[in-house]
Image (cartoon, rainbow, N blue to C red; front, side, top):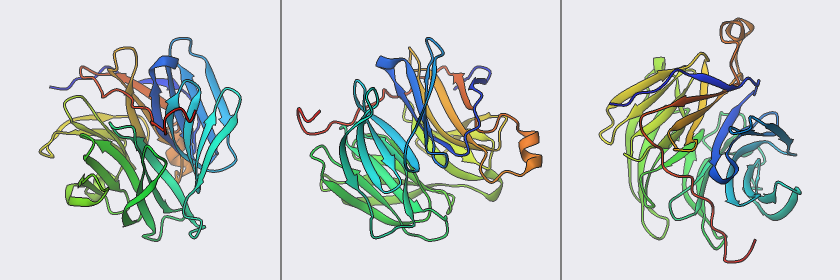
Length: 296
C-alpha cells in the first residue's frame, strides 16, 4: 500500500504555468519551469537556495546532460546550454513551419534519448506531435495529431505512457527499434470531474503517478490501470511531478495559476507553488540525455 507524508510547500512562488520538474541528484536540486513567464526555477533542497533564470522563449521542459550542461525545450527549439556561464552549446529548430505550435513536456528515457511533444499554443488545433531526439542528434517524428501533449512516463526503453490532455486520454505505447509505434492503446480515460491528465512519472514498481489539471490531485495507477492511491493538493491545477531527494522517495510537484478566476485564486492562494511530499516508495532515478561521445 502506498503511503505519503503531509504535503509541504517547498517554494511559495506564483508560477503562471509551472511545469517540467527535474531532479538532479549531484546538485541536490529540483528544477522546474514557468512556461508562460519564460522562467527556469532552481531550488537546492539542502541549502534552500533559490535561483530564477529568464530565457528568451516559452520553455516547456528542462533535462540534464552533465554537470552544469542542460537541454531546454523552448518554444520552437531544442537548446543545449551551460547554465553556469549561460553559453549556448547546441541548437535545433523544431517545426518552423508551424509558428503557432510550441514544445511542451519532455523526458529522457532509460537509454538516454530525449522524448518531447509539441502542441498548438492556442490549445485549439490537433497539430501536436511526439518526437525523439536520439543519441546521435537525429530527430524522429514518432506520432502526431495531438491537441495537448504531456509525458512521457517510461516503463522501459520501448514502452511508455503518453497523454493528450485535451482528449483526457493516457495512452500506453510500444515502439520498435526504428522508432515506429507497434502498439498504442488507451490506458486511462479521465472523466469530466477528474480534470485533465497532465505531467506524469513512474516509480520503481512501474506505478504511474498522474497530475490532474483542473483536478486538484495526483492519482496513482498500477499496471492494470487500477487507481491505487490519490493525493489531494491545496490548488486547482496540478501540472507535473518527479521523484527526488537523497533516497529518491520524495515527490516534487509543480502547479499553475493559469486560467483561474480571482475567486479561485482566493480559494487556492498557494496556486503556482512547488510542493513536496515523502512517500514509502522510490521513484526511478533521473536519466541524463546522452549526446554523441565527447561532444560536450
